Length: 83
Ligand SMILES: [Zn+2]
Ligand SMILES: [Zn+2]
Image (cartoon, rainbow, N blue to C red; front, side):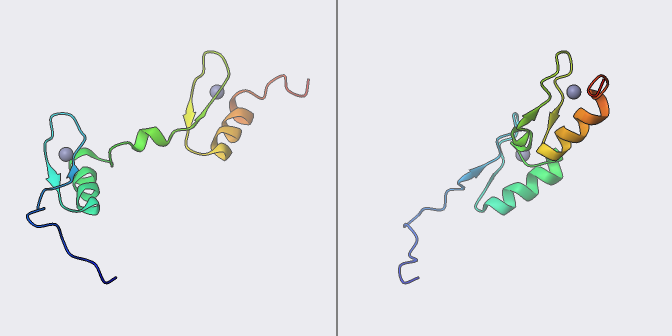
């Protein structure tokens, strides 16, 4: 923790809002996230957390959690499973 000097004149706001048509910028990431929650409803990139896709044809639902996908599978596509 000895070397915490700032770069001289490095007062640039490094955290740019990534939303289109928004050119807000912030010094801190948590400020940016807070701005995005308030102005845009959610932090940018939240959608990219969707990693699980239902593989049934014509469904294509997306889920954040494997458990949610599994629940969806048994709820929506379980017919015929144990037939
Ligand atoms: Zn913004
Ligand atoms: Zn599905």
